[in-house]
Picture 1 (cartoon, rainbow, N blue to C red):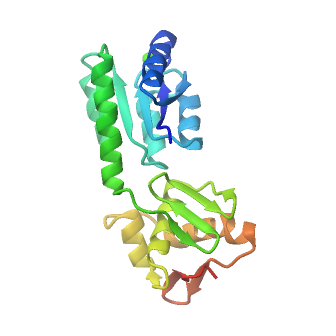
Picture 2: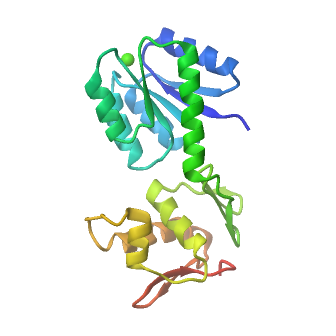
Amino acid sequence: MAVNILIIEDEAALARFLELELTHEGYAVTKAADGREGLAEALGGQYDLVLLDVMLPGLNGLEVLRRLRAESGVPVIMVTARDSVMDKVSGLDMGANDYITKPFSIEELLARIRAALRSGAVSEKRPAPLRCGKLTLDPARHTAVYGETPLQLTYKEFSLLQTLLENRDIVQTRDMLLEKVWGWDYAGETNVVDVYIRYLRQKIDSVFGVKLIHTVRGVGYVIKGDGT
Ligand code: CA
């Protein structure tokens, strides 16, 4: 299956050049010319890697990255102007996997793309798809399907569902879910687990008329092995 790369770059000549070179290397390429369009595309599509320019019209690249990281763990390589050290630091702080400075050689870019794709694959350990009844969750590709219908889940919804599926038939307390999905240092609202369970039920149980996620009163939540 082709590796899908999204290029968010407003310089048309550079974007076209990158598209030709990456396509020549066998990658499937999609282009977006401003920050807003790029963010929408990155969130809506199934991309293996995003090449993100910092200086963009609409939304700048750092803002695109910040909003993207609220929802997605897709590998991102930032493209920065020469000597803009702040952009590099901010980008890496905000979860970019790597950056490359203009002007760059195509060989350097290709090497960084291969490295980012590898590290993305290693950090996810290429887990096998999780299946339960009609539900299939593929953590490697970050896709979820119920029967034949693709589910549009946010990053956190996906993580929560993945955790419940990995622990089928084992009741997960709110604290366990909070730690596994939001991290041990999470300092927000404590009812966030219940809120996200509700989101998942709205997207799965309500739509398909099933009871996937069970409440264990006073304890937490569980998905049963056969999905009933
Ligand atoms: Ca630019």
